[in-house]
Length: 87
Image (cartoon, rainbow, N blue to C red; front, side):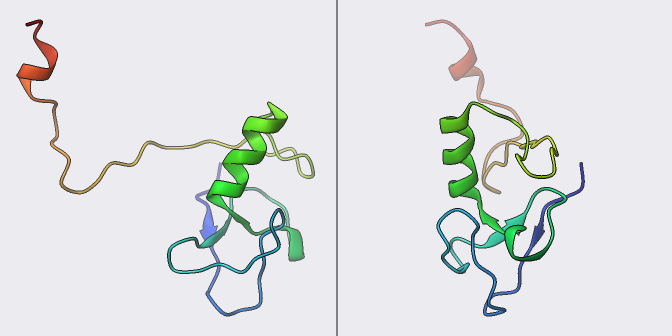
């Protein structure tokens, strides 16, 4: 799957679920092959919709959604041994 593309803020794009514009804290992105006014969505709106629908593909273009775990930059490369060792 292609890397999700983010919209430019203030370009008039709206989320296809909640119809709100993107913000710095909740940007819009397009994680599938949809085009036009329905291509943008907030990550939280998409995750809520996927949990409710029990689907893992776009209803319109049938692209399978994939997610990557993203950790804070301050997260250690490996968990501390004290977390892994039984006490």
